[in-house]
Figure 1: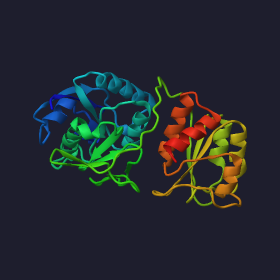
Figure 2 (figure 1 turned 90 degrees about the vertical axis):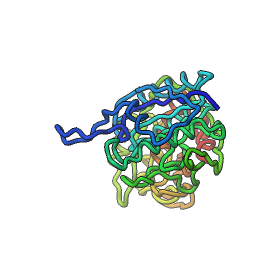
Figure 3 (figure 1 turned 45 degrees about the vertical axis):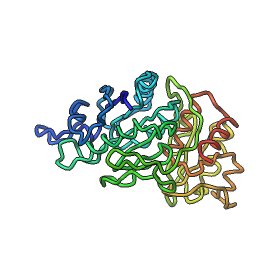
Length: 328
């Protein structure tokens, strides 16, 4: 099957080279260099290369992500383009993938990838990850799977994937869900399919939504500061099934009373939040206060979802209903 794959580069470790003058790695390699290092080529596919950004992903902004989404939307609308690959840094790869998944209504495959080892490392994983991503982006069976992440021979759904290790090559995984597919020397083998969920067309992210992660005996400094700053929404990574320090409960109730949606996720790597306990900061008390429970969606992605919903003009019960669809 002939056609084109759009490859959009944005920097990151996959494009990083060592600068002896500053003794630092910097994202200086362009897409041409990345393609030149590929261990294999798809024989009947042309690559349409574009260097969109040059940034380390720890500095990637939502505005830049929406710019990338607009580029992808344009390229994927072209009949000859089979799918797209985005290369970026790994620090916020899972978040960028999820934000793109929320704002792109792309039936064609969109695959994000990167590397744990820089481009000039003798064992860099970038070339293999990019080759596997191109294979996934051209595979007809990946159509309709939404935005995905391809790393270490596995393809993961943007909603489910997380970076589990700071430096290991097998860092990306989908805890509690498993990968969508594997790429074996260019052959894509699908294990499961994603659940279709709504998309939202946005020109900008306007909502300010902080993420607060709780620890034992946390004081209310951060939530007090958020309320003082008049944020648009709030996501709290609580304990276990979705519990908080008791002192947080009246602050949360105050936020909800002001019309500020408050979402509760869990700081645990796996599992769902559910209101069970009925005293102090227990989930039942939070449920009575009007919070939204984020299912198994982790805090960073729950924040992005809330930001997108608020920026799309949703409020009140419509936000609650949207969370029920995206994070049941």
